[in-house]
Amino acid sequence: MFMRPALEADLQPIKQLYQEAFPRLQRAPFGMLTKQWRRGLLDFLTFREEDDSFIGFSINIPEQDLVLIDYLAISPQARGSGYGSRALELLRLYYLGKRIFLIIEQPDDKAPNPEQRIHRKRFYLRNGYADSGLRINGAEGKMQLLVYTGNDSAAGHTNTSLVTGEDFLRLQRKSLGNLPMWLGNIHVEKPRFCK
Image (cartoon, rainbow, N blue to C red; front, top):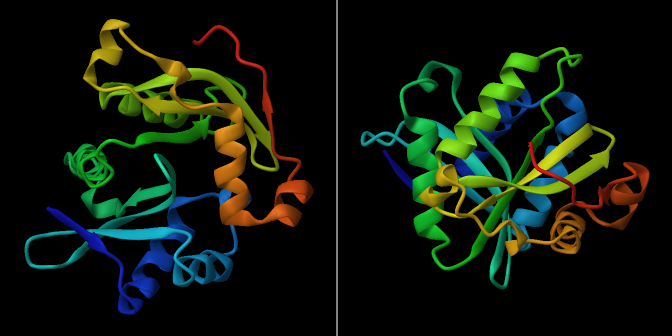
């Protein structure tokens, strides 16, 4: 598997997987994202097999020494085969030296997909991410901010203050703009004990 920056021809398979992989409330309008990509504000990266067939994508918001992995998806037929972990490793290498972070749905027994949320968090923890203690609220519900800290995170040797709530809001605003941020009532709760 390898990764390369997206081309215009990649937009259709990215859009199709984007709409399949993310719930409606968690998706920004795809046209807005592509406009921001064309302006150089977002990175669209594709994951591909050695024969160049499409496996998945990542939409990221880079800024100076920060990168927010805003969307990451692997095609359903390729899931469960290690492609997600490999994609995270390729992203880490691509953004070497940058503070990488992402948000996930907060695990919740009352949510319609509690097992999927727990599985997703375990996946990121296994791949070197740690819970920052920051919680994000908005139209999509409660989210947790995870920070890449390296593979020591499983042993509890983490520095989860690598990214602040202000960092998240600034990068999210770069992607969405002020009006969607306001309409979505996106805000950061004060840090608390990590679960």
